[in-house]
Image 1 (cartoon, helix red, strand yellow):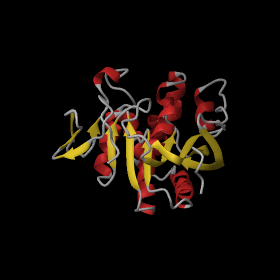
Image 2: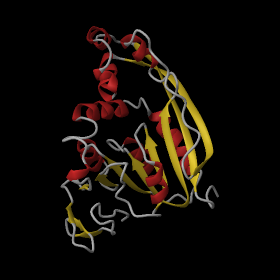
Image 3: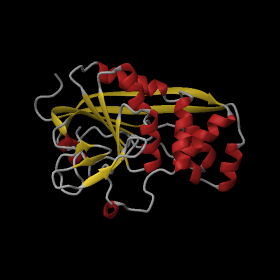
Image 4: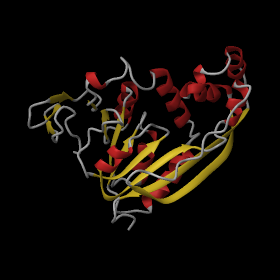
Amino acid sequence: MVWRCPSCGQALEDSDDRLLCPANHSFDRSKEGYVNLLPVQKKRSKRPGDSLEMVLGRRAVHQALLYQPLAEALGDVVAERPQIKTLLDIGCGEGFYAGVLSSRLPHLALYGVDVAKPAVKLAAKTYPHHHYAVASSRDLPVMTSTIDMALCVFSPSNDAEISRVLRPGGFYLEIGPGPDHLWQLKSALYEQPREHKPARCEMVDGSLWEEGELRYDRTLDNGLLRALLAATPFAFRGRRESRAALQAQSDFLVTIAFSWRLFVVGETGAQ
């Protein structure tokens, strides 16, 4: 157990069907097994994070194995470092990447946080052997120096919080879009599409240890194309008529491109 109380910062412990801290702050465990560690006063909206439609679209994309090559590449990075025993998935969504990691590396203790309750609910239901919490990446409800690796795929993160929760010499694996990720979708929706910005190579309190790129093409049928659109902000962007025309297509070729950076935090890492 690495969770800490979002009210007082003390360690949380299991107590029947809830988590309890020494100050008697109590957090019920849902029937799916997750806990809500996002205080109402720290929410930026009534329903923060991805909508249920986006979560279900992402689950369909993952079930179709569209991003499986990325998941396998991340598994390679983790497997090369047997000292990693505890992993925190920041912005975990519905748990796809942690699920692939745990199937390949069953020794890992996997924790996941996401601000979107529908995503965490689905993750906890699908992977009951993981530990999930509704929480913000800006204020991680995780005890200091308890995590061997933090993982963040296409989500916001906070360098100070990552450095705090990692053990000295811990790793942070950050994944973002490659320059031409989903370029065909952009071209269909925008008159002047732009490439994604290059991934960063610097991290506060961290040093770049390793980096990599992954790029491949896939042809999508209409159902998978619609799921991919629903899973991304493209579902709401571009001209309405362009979105309608795109949603009617099938046998749609799309480029999938990722960029990952592995940082080590502290002075004794990367053994």
